[in-house]
Amino acid sequence: MKSSQKFRIFLLIPFFLFACLMIEAQDLEKEIDDIVSSMYTVDEPGISILVAKDGKPIFRKAYGKANLELDVDLKPENVFEIGSITKQFTAVAILMLEEQGKLKIEDKITKYIPDYPTNDKIITIHHLLNHTSGIKSYTGMESFMKLARNDMTPKELINVFKNEPMDFDPGEKFLYNNSGYILLGYIIEVITGDTYENFIEKNIFKKISMNSSYYGSMKELIKNRAYGYQQKDEGYVNADYLSLTLPYVAGSLMSTVDDLLKWQNAISANTFIKRTSLEKAINGSTLNNGEEINYGYGWGKMTIQGSKGYAHSGGIFGYTTNGIFLEDENVYVVGLTNCNCKRVSDITRRVAAVVIGKPIPNKKDAITLSEDKLKKWVGAYQFEENVIRHVTLRDGQLYSLREGEDSREFKIYPMKDGSFIFDEGTISYTFSMTKDGRRQTIFKSGEESFTGKGIDKAPPAEKKTIKVSSDILKKYIGKYELQPSFIINVTVEGDSIFAQATGQPKFEIFAETELRFFLKVVPAEIVFSKNEEGKVDSLTLNQGGRQMPAKKIE
Image 1 (cartoon, helix red, strand yellow):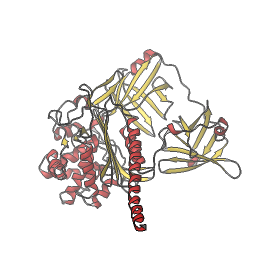
Image 2 (cartoon, helix red, strand yellow):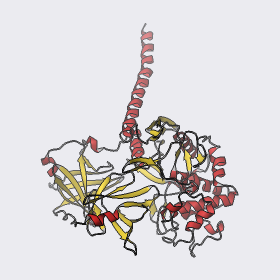
Image 3 (tube, rainbow, N blue to C red):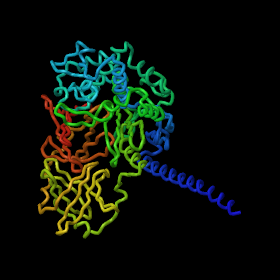
């Protein structure tokens, strides 16, 4: 009798463990669903998302519409243009050829394209792979939009940019560059004697049964194609036409979340290239001066809540994409969307963080503190290299402001763990008091932490604005292209002017001079430029120490 009771107990233990695992899986699924559904609704362009652990899907779902006109729901089987995730395939193709002894990464590009004008500079395949060549990116040229509907051969495409002045000497800087990858595609075709399309189809797609992946086409019938859209002031519209001969090896592939999981599993299993080759692709690279950059070959290294991995995003007319792989946890998250109107990487990062048990804090979980408790941390804090940040209180809300040329206020929110987070949740303060009763804080940004000591210093005066007439403001109205599928839309309402970047909210901008404006919500400014005829033809976005020009296209 006793042995029978023991047997029942043993039977109950595995059942109990199984039940616990089921509950955990259901809770995780709900957490992921809550994150995605908070951004994508059922009646707009949407997202197909897949999460895998140890190479197997643990979440796979689609949200929104594959076709707005026909009212067709998205499903995980839908095929999307993946944009610059294509660069992973191109980089792996190059590394495959290197392992076969058909090229070396250190080779000069003139070995394969003898007539390419290098201006007496040494440009290597390495420089093309990691965006350090200095070659002018054709997608940033004013002529690109005029060519968007034209089918072009690789040679014709190279002719568009080859005689443009270089942006810098090879290896001196990192500047994301689609022209470099066009040259890589042409080199693949020169070496193999075949088209890039055929090479990828035969050597990658067929080898791992990526049966729903294609070299993109606007003419061919592609089963389960999700239609691409863009968002304008009046609502959603069909994406502008783009001949997929133009993105070529930099962004013309199409795929599904299931096929991209096959791709990632093959990469992890060293199916196409050795681990030593993959290390070069995923671990970043260095500039001539030894400075490290996160971009390697077709991937950029990144961290999420302390977990290391590599990732790449894509943006092309009507589509945005992002794929993340966290190595130690063996977690892959990929999101494919059919609209260039939202930041899919915000979704994939948050989902990945939840899956590894390190959720990114969200301001919706902020707690309420009394004004007395908030006042306790108001003041200036001095960090290394004389960086000074000010914490201020206004109408019950704490703000953070860093001194400097582009200083702007950011709201910070109190959390249960005692930290104060910024909007995106990856930057925070943790305040405390020293033994002698002085304020101090730890400022955390991503994986870096900095200690700031409380000092007595008044915050800088607010930037002064001037009044610009609505007649002048109206001259700035239009769309300005930073890069393909990333547009700044400038609008005017009454005496106010607004700027809205692709996938981001509309923000008012404020005039310092007739041509120079700044944002109050982020540390950035916009400077408009006129041509010789006095017409506004471009703007420059100054943010994070970078000056990013954008031509007016509408």
